[in-house]
Each structure stands twice: as structure tokens, then as C-alpha cells.
Amino acid sequence: MSVTSADNLAEVRALLVSVLGIEDRAATLDAATPLLGSLPELDSMAVLEIVAGIEERFGISVDDDEVTAELFETLGSLAAFVDEKRS
Image 1 (cartoon, rainbow, N blue to C red):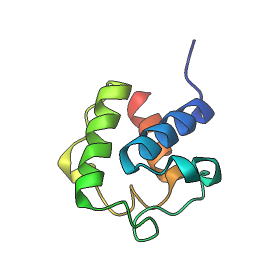
Image 2: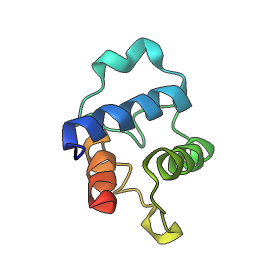
Image 3: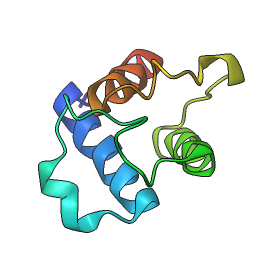
Image 4: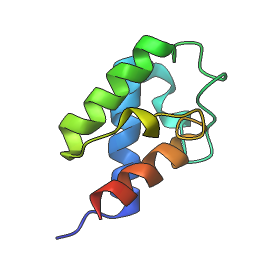
């Protein structure tokens, strides 16, 4: 059974919510939700925790040069990255 983009989006959202401690706002996060610069909880340490969580949860490797502002532009861009790395 393959994992769909919607499944990846939900898993990436769950990881983000957990790392940032924003459970109270989880329901408001969708693919278009801006991340960097919009979520005060998303600082450089949180970015590292999210990357480590993605590697662990999805079994993928994220190179340092792949961690860019564009990657963390929206929840959708982060989930699309995971989709791409998993295929």
C-alpha cells in the first residue's frame, strides 16, 4: 500500500505540531499554511528537530543543502519534499 500525499501531509503536520507544541492550532494547519516567518515557534532549533523527525519517521535522508527557506515556506512544500524523497 503506497502512502498518498494526503497521508504525508497529515504525518508532516502531526510532526510539526508535536515539535512546535502547537496542538491547539493543529486543526488550522493546511498545505497553504506559511511556516518560516509566520510561526514564531519555528526557530532554527525547531527546524533541526523537524528535519531529524522527518528522517526518522519517513526513513529518508535529508542533506544539509536541502534544508532551505523554500523547503519550509509552507506545510505543503514540506510535505511535497517528503513525497519526492520517498518516491
